[in-house]
Length: 260
Image: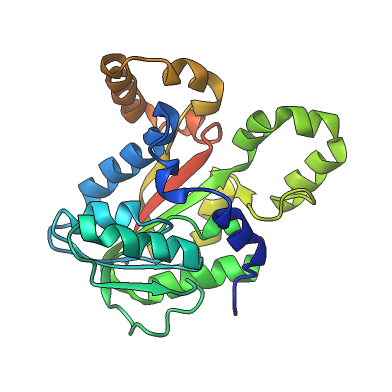
């Protein structure tokens, strides 16, 4: 089964994905939080599959720290960016264009870690999301770590509040389906729904994280902070981002789980 990739490719061809997590303080929070938590869970010298690698920011972060990383992405432009950036980093084990829905090139239980940090929120079809879990878990060793990023439904009502309050029909469709007629590229869920989605798989949740926390609520203030104060904000954020009361307000959520 193939991801319906035309609109996804159009989206990523229109942006600089490699720079997205670096532009502002509020963009950096997602990356800094993700690696903070993954570093707690990933053992030294691990084999890692970054199965929807985007421009490779996580692939290179972990390869530069001694891990063996395979990086793949559905979008050819993203993979070209990874190849272009390779000269500045430790060498990746493999770079490929491919879908997380079809990892047949890899045998069962090959990797210590699988990073699923993008596909879930581009798969509007339930069967495809399930297949992304199944393939990720298939190639993951028993006892290994999987990281699943998702986009929160309620946080994006805050982000797109003017559109949704201007067209309540869109809001109704969005709440029912996780997407709407004006944007079928992104699928949004809730912390409770994604936990329910993965409960039938052999996974034990280790951390469930509000990756960028209260970005949409006070992001304009955070972006203006000098670096010293931004570091203090990050310390506060990291101390609170597993608080269940914050999860639904965070644009991105992250589940880190162990295969049992």
